[in-house]
Length: 150
Image 1 (cartoon, rainbow, N blue to C red):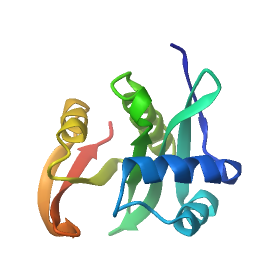
Image 2: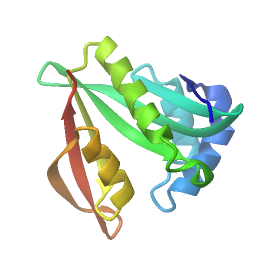
Image 3: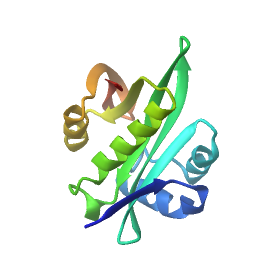
Image 4: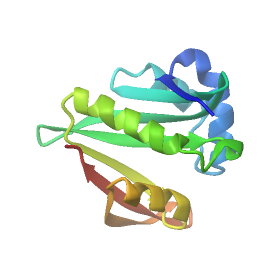
């Protein structure tokens, strides 16, 4: 199975929104919010294609805190039929590489406390839990993770 990583563009909005809704229920971004992110100057995004079909995507923003750039992963989605095939790992590696090229030294993200598969992936890739987010996802708690990009 060949995985091709490419830039996410506004032309892919409908498909990306469809995947977002499959991956997240109450927490899904609206179509309008995805459209905004895909056209925002500070947002970078990648899609993964398998056999010319979009299998997943990732969006991140570059923010500044105390004069330091950091990346904030906003959403990472892989269609259910394509999970556990290394796609999320490839998307994360790609976005981290793009962030490094832009001078970003740290990457941050939030994840549901009960999303064991995602947590395991993030930990495997060097992300560390730095805080708990009470009722961040409605009634569900979230975790705040950080990784230093070398």
